[in-house]
Length: 294
Image (cartoon, rainbow, N blue to C red):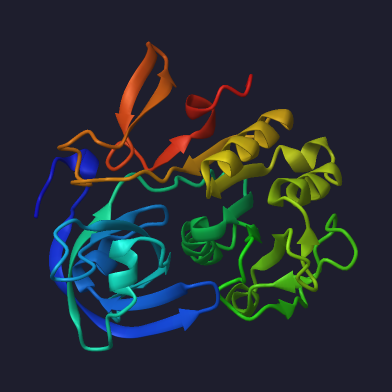
C-alpha cells in the first residue's frame, strides 16, 4: 500500500503469531511474522493491528523490536480494554491483519551522541527499539531509564555496567539491554529491589546533575509514556537546555491520517496548528507540544 513520500511505505499484510509471552501485570509480548513491516520499520513508529476477527476497530501498538532479516516485529502491550484483552487470547499460528509501519520516527542527533532515553509503562517499547538502533552505531552512547508502577515485563537483574551519576544502590536493569551492552536503570514507586524509588525524571536529573557543561552539550533526550510523564520529561529537558523528542500516544480510528481523530495542538513557526499524531507524529519536538518555557 503506497502513500505520499512523507508517510513512507505502509504495508497491509497478514501477520502470523510466532510467539506470545504473558508477563506480570497483564502485560504481553507478541512476536509477529510481518516481513513487509519489519523491512522498513524505524524506532518510534507503530502498527495498527486487528486484535481479533470479531472486532472491527484496530488498535495502535508501538513497535518494540524488529528483525528485518527474519521478517518479524515484536510488540509489548497491556491488556486493558476489549481489543487488547482479545489480542491476549491469540495463540501461536493465529493470523492478524497488520498495517504498518506508521508514523514519523525518532531522529537521533549525531552531534549529541549521549542519548538519554526515558520510557514509562507501555512507553517502554519505542525506547528499547531506539536503543537497539543506536547500539548499531558506535558513535552513540545511550542511557535507557525505564519506569513502571506495575511489575516490569521482564526479570530485573543487577547491572554490571557502571553509570556515573546514578544514585548508589540503583542497579536494577533490563536484561536484554544489558546483553546488548546498553546501560539501563529502572525506576518505580513500588519499592522494587534495585530500582530508583521515585519518578523516572528524578533519576534522570540525578544523572544530568553530575555532567559538566561540555557533557550536557552532548546530551539529547527522547521519551515515551503517559502524558503527565512526557510533560515532566519536556520540563526537565528545558531546565537543562537539551533538545527533546517525545512520542505521543492517542486513540486512533484510521491511523493513516484520514479521520483526523488523533489531532493535538502544536506550536509551529507560523503559530498554533493541529497535527495528526498518526502521520505527523507520533514523534514530535517536545517544545512544540508542551509550553515549558524553552
